[in-house]
Image 1 (cartoon, helix red, strand yellow):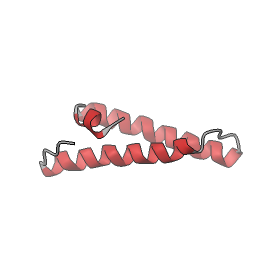
Image 2 (image 1 turned 45 degrees about the horizontal axis):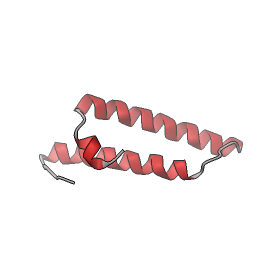
Image 3 (image 1 turned 45 degrees about the vertical axis):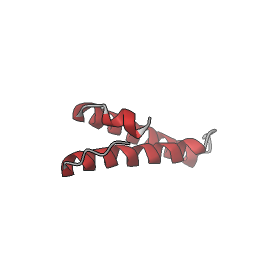
Length: 68
């Protein structure tokens, strides 16, 4: 999901998306540990999505209206 799409979500939707992505990251770590992970690039993508969500949440908390 792109930053622009994340900025269009409400705070509750962002929290829900964050929880889903963190759960996915946990599952990916578990798959890595058990040796069944097929797409290792998905780990990196999940981490980046979490970072994007945190960035949007921090912008809102600081009152910034970044367009981007």
